[in-house]
Length: 255
Image (cartoon, rainbow, N blue to C red; front, side, top):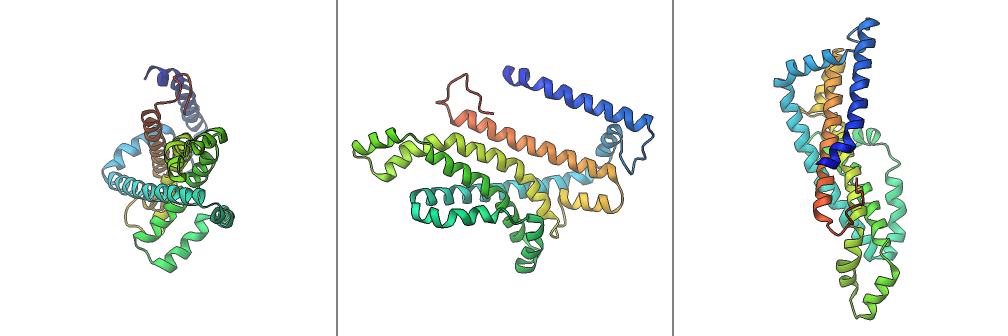
């Protein structure tokens, strides 16, 4: 906790200064609230709208957690399969790269046409967002295992499965957690985008209603909530990483 405080006070100070500048500029320049509300107005609106906003927040959190779990599990399974089957990896890895060149915002309407307005297209959107960072990070991690260690285990009579379980998987954990941290931040964005496909509740729905009625203060409430959720999910992955990877040296930074 002490180290987190020592590292965290500087960015917190910068954020506070930015909010102060924002507050002063909007007040002295008399910027209309519909164009750019002051932070104090956004905070007041947050308190006012919270009773109705809370259910939107809960819906987005549940959707994010479910999509993040499915996406990361899929990414890990695909990475393991491609690593253990080199010929399959050579055939499919370029396709995985190409799949990320399709903008999610363009793919979303097609998913609605193919699968309707239910939960499935939303899960697909979040899975696609979370899948790629985990899969690529895991594959890179598996390849970072020292060749001399692999050679030593082969000389000791270890099977391919034993080499993967005892050597390649533990060495890949730092890379896997790097992918998980990226996916954790992307998952919230993916959930909000998926809610634009026709949800009844969620931060994406709240943001759409607010923007259509020119309630810019409510749009900023949604934006700041998304940012905070992303930081919370990122922090959870960091804590899990510190807890699970105990063999790192004490002086090594994993954030």
